[in-house]
Length: 259
Image (cartoon, rainbow, N blue to C red; front, top):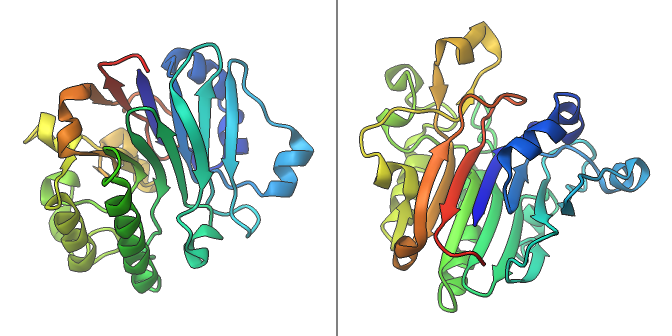
């Protein structure tokens, strides 16, 4: 089974950048999208569809903001039991930030973590979101292993961004955000990329400014983290940095089983 996670920075924007061709190239069973930036009214009016996939939308109430979606391959049995939107916490669910897919063997969360913002004006909101999703995950792990995928909006360690010294205390690299990530991982969760590649420097997001992507001045803020007891099911994980269309690139997870 192949799962893709990708912050696309706007569904309509990426459609204009050969997204259909990219979907065919990715050839994934599940595609988790973050920052879709399309409201429920526009989804209905524009009737967006992708051949070979069923779309499960989770738009924010605020038009053109945040939002997530899951694309499910239609021509293959994947053992999916249910897909739910939200965590049951309205202050976060109104922004369309979390979807929970239950399969026969695991839970898969598609998450778009809040950005703390340049002046850290949303840091408290983000930390509250972090605690809420962690609480939800702890309940889910009592039933099945959990995969938490998406844009976490944090670079955990200095190796996870090109210029750590210059960014200490900035959004995405504050002590508080990094400490939460450390705490999360200490609760029997594994950051798969860092587990597989302990010292590798590879990024998933680059600022549009100053040709940062061309110069590879980036951050790794998009993750697949899994329950420790799920590790035996992992085949591989790749950061697909060559694929463009957004300021983020896709991250690909391959599982050993077929459903």
